[in-house]
Image (cartoon, rainbow, N blue to C red; front, side, top):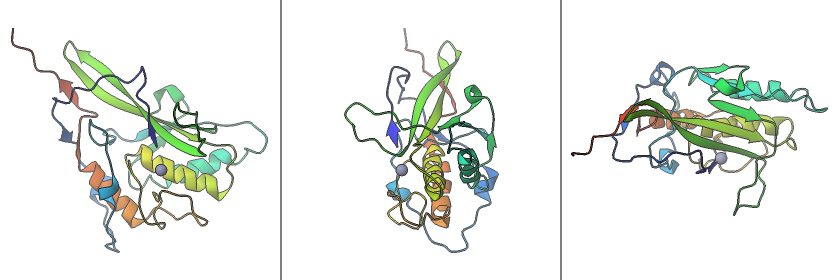
Length: 220
Ligand SMILES: [Zn+2]
């Protein structure tokens, strides 16, 4: 979970209002039979608001590696991605350029100042879709890297976890029975009611992402 403020990230005008998007029906209808709470207080959204998607299904590209030993990699990743589909609609597409979340079987690139390589990582980039002289839609895009050194259930666990970040869960759970627990565990858990409760609260929050943003004209 790393933020890249590189040359591609535009300046964000924080004077522009923040609004919540309508809750997707799949989250609106979600009910937690166990009443197990959430870890929303652990979520630290970026300055421009929560990293929510606002048009569905979310388009996802999954690399098809041809390396020896990677034969079942894509199937494992696909299954783990689709574990989130009951909560937010997901569509897996073949055209990586059109994807909002891209998943690759590669080592996460090293960052300056952080020379410790991780085995899996999700990063986002921002862009402005210009719609007029003073108006734009602030958008984001996620890339997930899954290290080729991982296999079996660890691919599943890492995919579920990093995909949770890419769906907007920008923080970690303190409980190891949640997918978004900060560390890898011996027996990776399924998506928990606490994960979904947290996701739902995030999608109720205001953001600048996905809205038409209009800068007020300066008085002349
Ligand atoms: Zn994480």
